[in-house]
Structures are given as C-alpha cells and as structure tokens.
Image (cartoon, rainbow, N blue to C red; front, side, top):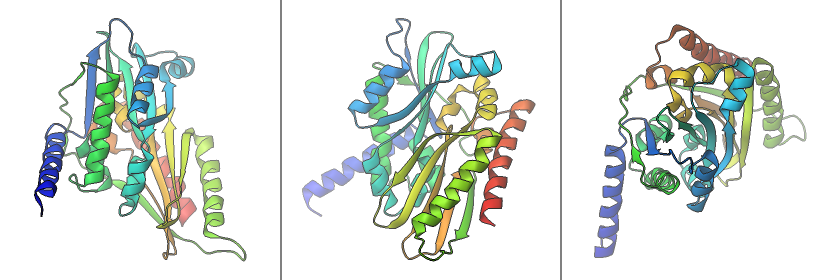
Length: 304
C-alpha cells in the first residue's frame, strides 16, 4: 500500500469510527434554537439539496392531523423523505437491503422551547436495518452526507442526547414469491401486476404512498421501493415520540435479481418502533401492532 492510499484509508476509518461513536443510538436528533423562526421545513429542504440530498416529500403533518383528529401536539411537525441516488445505486450492487431505507426519512419539528429539531437514522441505525456493515465506505458516505446536510440546514446546531434502547430486538418482515410468466409477459409485467394488486389492497385500509421509486440497475430485472404511511399509526406515536420520523414513513422494497426466478419483498417491521422509541402507552402500542399486522396480512395473501 502506498503512502497516499494509507492516508486515505486511515482518514476513512477515522470518519467511520467518529460517526459510529457519535451515533451508537439508532436515531439522532439535531437541534438548534429557532426563536427567530428563520429556519423552517422548507429551508431545511433547500439546504439538503445544496449538498446533494434530495427531499422528495415534505408534508406539514399538523395541517393533516388537525383536520383528521382535531388536535396537534407540536408547534410544527413535518415528515419528509429524502435520497441520494448515486449512493443508493452503489449500495444496490451488493446490498438490496438498502431498499428498506430508500427513501430515508426525517421528522422536522418545533418544540415548546422554540427549538427546531430534525430526527434521522444514525449510521448505526442504517447499518442495523440493512445489515450493511457500519464500516462500508458507501454507507459511511451516506451517513456523512446526511450529517453535512443537517449542519447546513441548522447552523450552530448540535446533536441531542438520545437514550432509547439501542439494542432493542429488531426484525425485518420478508416475503419471497416465484414469478411465473404468462405468454408474452416480461418480469416487469409480472411485477407491475403484483404492485397493482398491492396498491389496491393497502389503500382501503388507510395506507398511503407519498412516493414510489423505480430504479434501473444492471444487476436487477427490477428494483422498486415504496414510501408508505398510515396516519392512524403515526398520529398516536408522534404525540410523545416526535423522533418517530426517523422510521416513518417506512420503506417497502420489491426487487428481482437477474438470473433468479424469485421476487423479494421486505420492510423493517413496524413494531420495531415499540422498542426503538420506548413506546409504553397501551393505545399507541395497539395502533403500531395493528398496522404491522395489517401490512403483513396483505403481503402474506398476495405472495402465497
């Protein structure tokens, strides 16, 4: 190894260690005083874009919650989704599990002290969900890019101390389905037929799709991800756990590798929120478990 390569490797390892040691919790909350009101969800979105992190959806949830439920819990509360296509596609080369955090999510909220806070997954959380090693250069680069975006969006901000159970039991809900083609059909045709059924099943029971991504990649016949939310779950959760935006909306990945007859569907189980956010309230627990059961039931029926 030459001297330059050794220096670069050392710098990368130091960056990885710094990000991980500062982010051993699965989520992180970046916060700054905002009594002036100059920082908003819209300015956060613009700041993210300047470093290459594209915010595709940025919804004012208070507007939705006040109309649907008649009560809000935070001065401002937005849920947003964001991506960096270049890093996602690089990670897709080896890890289709990147689809379970594509898009990444965040909550942007103003608390009672007029601090504006942005909650995202940490490097540890990204690694935990996807099983991509925390020292993978592209995953480290992704976490570093989000960190850069947060500092750009909230100048003089700092990470708050988070004391959730970082080692709570974690699960992924996965399904496999063999694709049998009708005469003249392609794998994309079969996928589109499945997704049409999927969308028709989730909509009537309250699941919404803020965004769907279709990736073209040489290793896959198709690779799609859905960003999905159910208001009846996120509304009770965010009341006491506004940092839930690190997990919601949740991502469902649907893909087929070339040379493999099977289609794979996976998402981070919604009831992971219980341990990760220390949810104790009985009604909230019921809403989270109900939402997980509904999504699992739909996919079980479609893939059997």
